[in-house]
Length: 130
Image (cartoon, rainbow, N blue to C red):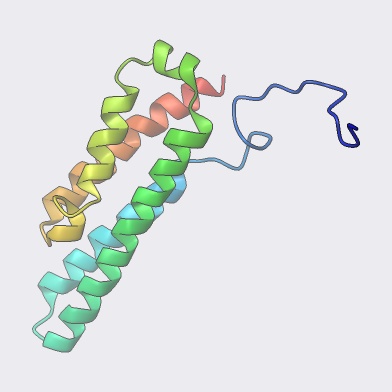
C-alpha cells in the first residue's frame, strides 16, 4: 500500500530554494583565520597566542565545512561541466583550510591564498546564478 507515494517530480540544482548557499560564509571565516594569525604575531602573551591558535583552527575547520556544503550540495554535474576547474578549486581551497594550510600554520600568506581561492569560487558561484 502506497500511503506516501509522490505525485509530482521536482527538480532543483540545490537542496533548498536558492539563496541559502553563499561562499561569503567561507570567506568571513577565512578572514577571521587571517585576523587570528595577525593578532597571534602581534602578541607576546603566551596565553593569548594559545587562544588565537585555537580560534584560528576552529575557524579553519568552519571554512572547510562551508566549502564542502557548496561543493557537495549547491554545485551539480552541469556546473562541473561548465567550469572544469571547479573541483580543483574546491580541492585546493579545502586543503588550504586544512592541516597543510591555515590549520597547521600561522603564516598570513597562507590565509591570503585561502581567501584568494574562495574569491575564485565566488566568481564562479555568482556566474552560476545568472
